[in-house]
Image 1 (spheres, one colour):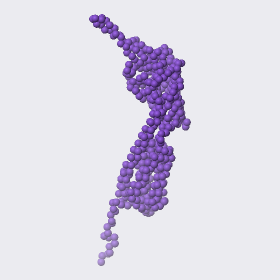
Image 2 (cartoon, one colour):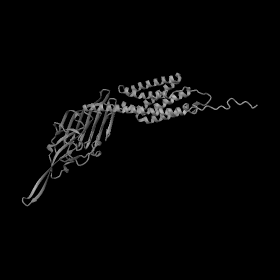
Image 3 (cartoon, rainbow, N blue to C red):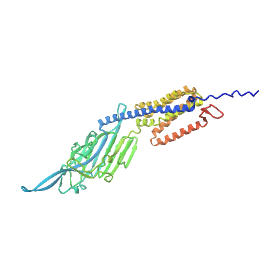
Image 4 (spheres, one colour):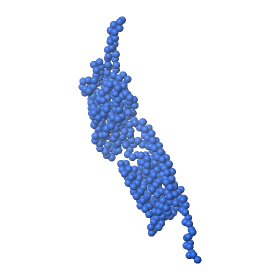
Length: 469
């Protein structure tokens, strides 16, 4: 009688169902992450919408206060009349001389101009939105001469310096609250609204002007002081042959902008102090020019590119921080999913894809919490509240899935570390890319280390101690 065959003989091993295989589970998780990217895009759109709404509220506040303060000038406008004789000869009247006159304007920039500002700044709120507004005094002093321009007059051109006007251009008429001092050659000027065709092609420039009889043979001095107000930024045009500017304001976070940076500046918790010195050789604006009867200048001057000044910057405002936080949202889907996946494998507790989906939605809600709370509290406090709430929720949810506090504590630890790293990244603007790269590298290394003995075919750990964490 043949030997009895082993009981296993003739039995076939039951193939593993595709729906219970590790590859299928990983594929489902990848699909869930891709699906969850849709609400992430929606949240990013919401942040942009709220940011635009805040910008509209800021513009509304600033429009009533004086808008951004931009100073063009001072410049002097002197009427010039050109006379041309045209000789004609007819049989009846004989030789006839006709005189044609053309009106021009000679515009002269200061030989030297000194701009001094002393401003106080504060935040003004409308609802939950705020904007940096400032008020204070702006002083302009310097002198004008004709030495550069007088040789450019033609023999048939006559200048009328007694009809000269001094003009100061402004981005908004509301920027001037009152005139404190208006001294021209020792006499007081009376300013009135109007830029008097300050520059052709720049119709958006408002301004003030005053009659200022010009001494064509000597030096004309001016000393003006205005009480001004505005918001977000202050700009000036380096209009003098030598332009010196000194800006002092009680705002701790200035952002120097424009075509010229300050030569020296100091920063403190109470404000900043900055100085500029700019030569006419560094700019494209001529020292003088002519305009025709229509106020047109034949050349081109790009004023906006020549402006210099400072923005009253709100460093890393909460909308910017929220937008930057959403950029890392994929990590807050992948890492919690990986953590749940490892807990599932090591504890041999099956976790349904719907439960993964809920955990992903919870991490997306973090960004909604962060956005809504940061509109009412400081970003740091809002971040602490939102991250603590989500860390606690994910820890309790993991406890209900793996049924032990020891394993669910891993989820709490992972989430706490993630939120800590994200907060440091958001506040380290210059180091954000480096920190993000190092964190991504470390996370990849940790995952590779934890899965080094994992049998991906059976989702089991090789070695003597099976099914152990």
